[in-house]
Length: 95
Image 1 (cartoon, rainbow, N blue to C red):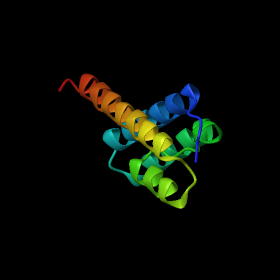
Image 2: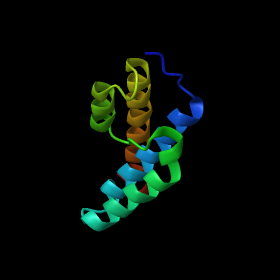
Image 3: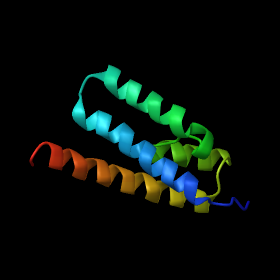
C-alpha cells in the first residue's frame, strides 16, 4: 500500500501536537486539554486526519488506514511537535 506523504500533512501533525501538548503542559484540568485537542482537530483534521498522538497513528496503521511510511512520518512530526511544546513551556515558565 503506497500512501503519498505531503509536507502539509506533516506540518499539520506537528502543529496540532504542539497545540495539544501545550494545553496538557499548561493545565492539569481536563477541560482546557479537551478544548485544545478539539481546536487542533478542527484546524488540522481535514489535512492530516487529526491524529496528534503516536498511539492513534499506530492504531490507524494496524487498521490499514495509513501506510507504514506515513506512520513513521507522522510519529516523527508528532515527536517534533511535542519537543517544541516542551521547549516553549520551559521558556515560558523560566525552567
